[in-house]
Amino acid sequence: MTRFEKSFTQQEAIPNDAIEAAVEVMRSGRLHRYNVLPGETSEAEKLEAEFAAYMGVPYCLACTSGGYAIHIGLRSVGVKPGDLVLSNAFTLAPVPGAIEAAGAKPVLVETGEDYCLDLADLDAKAASSGARTLLLSHMRGHIVDMDQIMEICARHQLTLVEDCAHTMGATWDGRKSGTFGKVACFSTQTYKHVNSGEGGFLTTDDPEVIARAIIYSGSYMLYERHGAGPEAEVFDGLRLEVPNMSGRMDNMRAAILRPQLERLDEQCARWNRLYHVLEEGLRNHPHIKLPERPEKEGYVASSIQFALPAFSPEQFQALLKRCFERGVELKWFGNPVPNGYTSRYDSWRYLEVPDLPRTIEVLSTMCDMRIPLTFDEDDCRTIAEVISTTAREVAEAA
Ligand SMILES: *Cc1c(COP(=O)(O)O)cnc(C)c1O
Image (cartoon, rainbow, N blue to C red):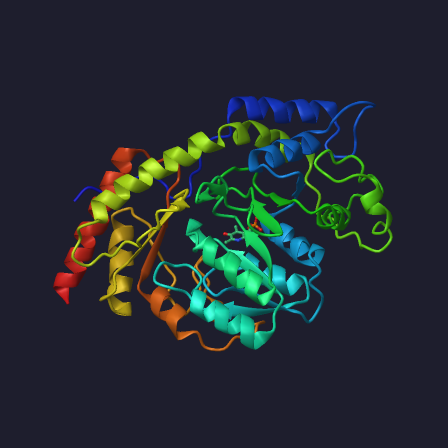
């Protein structure tokens, strides 16, 4: 069987126009977002206006990371130390970390077979916990039924904060993911949909929320240099009340991101083409189950998840090992010991979390794989072939 040779962690190069823009910023020496000449608009400020326009919302703040955007997003919607925040049990570590940074306590919600938040459990826990905030993580780009989410939020008077780290460019029923909640948070970290190494965005249509977020991010008293921010008066009552928790984006990162944003939709279409090749290659396998994706979900499949419902933990270990030997790096969230980014809720020891048996059940039979855009459709056919053959061998060996 052929061995797959490409790296699963190799992203595409930064485009040349982005490199040139970054060099230009370095030549100017004005890397700090508030360091501008008279009449000049900084790269960070331009980027914010462009991302707000892309999202179709009035306000955007660029900041240091997606996790930081969630942290100050929670604070900006009024989450106080000790408050409870409902969130997905199946997500990545920056999400509970951001809740912790805001001084709040997560109420983790079970995971369905579609890898989304379990809506019945959400409804029950919203009622029993009395939490007032839902931090909804669109984990791995799987978008939960947003119509039902909005109905549950209205019924329990929950403020919705969206973690769109995996849904930048995605839609639900034709509407952009990140325009449903009070606040949406995005990451521009290397493994997300645009790449500045580190970085994040916070978007909202609420002038007071964006004003707080801007001051939290460390605007000194230069908050008027936010074209994608509110009128100056909105800051009047807040400027001395909200602490500075420095997390500004610099002009270098912004310069790298602006040309990438122009190509974002094109890149999203490329991810989906690769995903469909993988999906085709795995679809009729006797042991592999792909999630059913709702009609309304306009996903961006920058990764793929699938289940092997009948596989034991030993079979998963064997599958991962043999695929790895053939050059295909699958991840498994079923491991009780976290490995790389695959940490599970029960390994976030700083939290007090009750058992979540359905989440464990779903994660223990799920495989996860990123789809770098350095792969082409032939690569994806090879990968699907490696996974299919190996899964069949492991099943037959049992
Ligand atoms: C990457 C990620 C974030 C935020 O990531 P940063 O590394 O802080 O930019 C948030 N949620 C999920 C699900 C993520 O994968």
